[in-house]
Image (cartoon, rainbow, N blue to C red; front, side):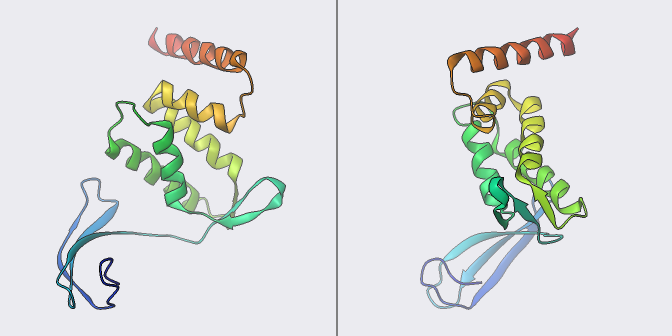
Amino acid sequence: MRCPFCAFDDTQVKDSRPTEDSTSIRRRRQCSSCGARFTTFERVQLREVTVVKSGDRREAFERAKLEQSISLACRKRDVAPERIDQLVSGIQRQVETAGEAEIASQRIGEMVMDGLRQLDSVAYIRFASVYRDFSEARDFEEFASTVQEAAANERG
């Protein structure tokens, strides 16, 4: 592992333990050259998956992009980072275990929508506004009313 401070190629693992949700390994490392310490996380990647985007563009599935879009939807909301990480890990697991080499970006978007609906209604509406390309305030109103109706039906 390359040192992020001096770019030296030789670092030593000083401590290693599973994360709280056991989806990754947290490692404390020390650079042999400059002595700096840093943390890395190691996750299992089951397979390489290609995301098929609109216009038949293809790109490799990237966990970081998924995490960024969910974090952006949850920005300034009372959603713990651990919950976001669990959602991202769950979606990544679904994508990698589906058994397909390619997955449509729309399918990933639906997985995110399902997860955010259960996590935080405001984050769900924020993500939907971008994902479904809301163009007018009326689009927000209509979608928000369906979210409220669904929540009322779930409660009682």
